[in-house]
Image (cartoon, rainbow, N blue to C red; front, side):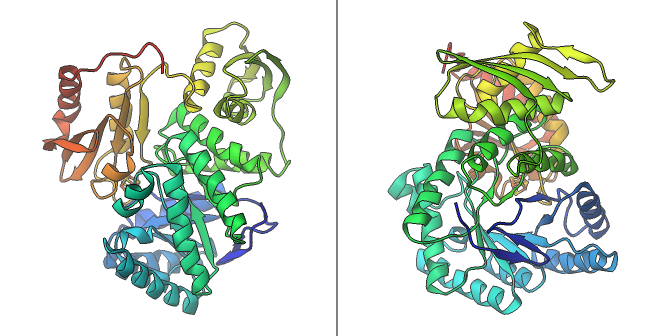
Length: 451
Ligand code: SF4
């Protein structure tokens, strides 16, 4: 897909430029010391653009100071303000940083008023040379759009096209778009639909790719690689963020590797592929366990998502951290990798499906620790979708199709959701996992034999 160029500070997204790798701080933005420190670590790890959450006007001031310190340290990495709901904060941030990420549909319940606020933001961005990312995540669409199209990839595409048409009418083109979802098939379909719709209307805005709330560890990496690589392999995508519920610095090598594969700088460690009927048998000679995980996901994920194959077998070996080869031929680990990848591509569910946000300055508790504890204690609930979200502002919307949600309220309290309904509020964090398990135990859940 040929996209136009969008300038974000000293970086250009789109056109023939290399895919830009970005990440987001999980510090409180108002904690200038911690946020500056994390920006430096992200930059040193290779982040080419860094996003910070901006929940208040006070955070805009902090953002300005973080930027000042970075520039003073000789770090020119563009900063992106992540703003939800408030056009006033977005407008203030647009005068400070190089890009603002917004969902204009959340500016106001009344669509016309939301449009008016968006136009005001566009004017400020035009004056300041600031770029905009229109970020419409699955689960964060307004009632008007979901009423018309359901909570579907089609709805995501339609919502994006409405705002892009408004940009075009206002002759504003410094715009990037994202349609993220935690569900890889929804995410892939939404971007494919958008790429087609933009082409049909003669638009060429660059696309920011990501699988949101992907979780952590192997499954977080696999989901991200499946979704992002499927699209990059079709020429869709200009900038990527891998969202992990871990130290955000860990996101960079994963994103970098995926981006570099599609610039042909680096190649898969797959040494053989045999397709027998609808099963792929892939042989690897991977230099590390992480490379194996990413290569498998990039090589086989799209085939699974597009139902070209139904099953996989992983063979060969990878090198362990101490340099010894680890065989995969017929091992339990090889079967585990296959199970994980089939689940990342949503073809077979062998364990619960977890949705966990990466955390940001809005996170109200130790997300990583809590998520790992929830995973440990719910591991038997095959096929159930369980969300662990950092904040009550965006968490409930963004956990999309979860059966249960654990959402941080702040002040050491948690709300537990059953589907979209809050069923227990203000539960102390220390009790919340027990209460969640009690609720699941008393519900009519039974493990599906297959999905
Ligand atoms: S859901 Fe998580 S990542 Fe999203 S705004 Fe809340 S804390 Fe931040």
